[in-house]
Amino acid sequence: MFPSVDGRLAILALLPLSLVVITALGWFIENRQRKPRLPPGPVQLPLLGNVLSIDTKEPWLTYTKWHAAYGDLFLVRILDQEAVVINSQHVAEALMDKRSRIYSDRPYLATVEPFGWSAVTFGFTGYNDEWRLSRRLFHQTFRPSSALKFRPMQISRARDMIVNLIDDPQHYHSHFATFSSSIGMSVIYDYQPSARDDPLVKIVENALTVGLDIATPERAILLKLFPFLLKLPDWCWGSSIKRDARISTEHMNEMRDLPFQCAQQHMVANSFLGQSSMVAENLQRMEKQDEASKPMFETALKQAAAAAVLGSYETTSSTLMIFALAMVLYPDVQRRAQAEIDLVIGRDRLPTFEDRASLPYVESILRETFRWQPILPLGVPHATSSDDTYDGYFIPKGATIMCNVWAISRDEKRYPDASRFVPERFLDVNGALTGDDPAGYIFGLGRRACPGRYSGDASVWSAIVTMLATVDFSSAKDGQGKVIDFTPQFITGIIRYLFRHSILLSLTVASL
Image 1 (cartoon, rainbow, N blue to C red):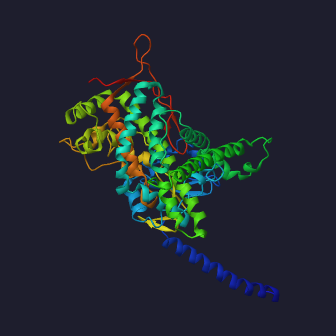
Image 2: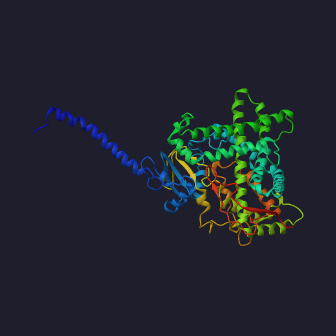
Image 3: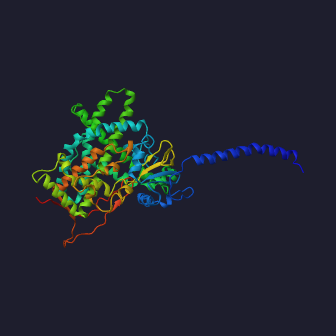
């Protein structure tokens, strides 16, 4: 029996469609064979990806565990976002340094705009003209050659901090914070904060206390899933995140605007003479620009200035807390460093930057402080601006790129017994420093590396060497003279930092 006319027509109609399907299938198979494979990674769930398998409070611990299974480069998916996790400094440098053109963007973070972070830092801004302007303003002040001129002031502030520590040792965290913010305020706004309870320093503290506590990864995921939470009326259940965002934004705007206004008023009062701060120098440059470009320039300057204060305050004070913890837990390290200072400098004066090259053990303590408990365990995420291929793996455009600093710092092959504080790992058999410096990955890589690295490194060194030369850290004791046991408590979020009253320590003046 032959097909009917309608049947023959249907067959003829299906022929071109079949040809299209077969051609498309062949193209798909061929393209799939030619296209490099994605990096390995854990099995993903539909829609959710790997989000249920990741410790949202300390994701670096999950990624470090997966490093053993999937290698130096692996892929995870968090909801709809692909993320490539780098667990090796070598791979991080190969991508972020050598291919920085591709790896210098930032991923979308749902908390940045609502919680006011975009007003005070360009660190989360995409790789665009706005970022380049803010970065250039920042770099002019904090590039290596410019940072040298801050050294006398950094030493002076470190000595002021010692006076506060000796006078009021119980509030050591507050003195670390005052030291950190006083350097930033001086360089950026030409503002000299009072030794304690300074109003502008308090504004910075309030903004960061609120911002770091509530702009957490958990809230970022929640807002990405349910952005309507920011539009709920205040009386509605679930609106607390909206109220937190509003409070955070108010504090961030205050931190951005009030110190800037003080700098402007100070300039007017001093008739623009002798102004050497970051804000003053750039406001003078702005006066020479055309009117159309001034608003954008001033906005970028405000943002760069606030970012510098933010960076100098939290990262420096948090690192000094880690140092204090290490000195309490490892008293032999403290004694060896003090012996080196006594041998090289003597007891007739305090250390200065001219002594730095002659104090390799103190330098090794600085390096180990950076490595032992990194305050940015995943750095600040990058994003790819175009497709890329590395080591046969396809890395798609728009992927989030995370450098797992925690995994790098815990590499047992590179750092045996990595959980212990061992400065000697950075010294060779002759007592000279090795070429391994954790600053190479702690401060970030590529075009988005911390532009204040050199100033921050100098601030931490000046504080550490001055404390080692003047005070002894020891465990706190009860009324019967017994050591009080304590467990350090870390707060996680954008930055991993020690709870301010987490270390039970005693401070005494070093014996002369």
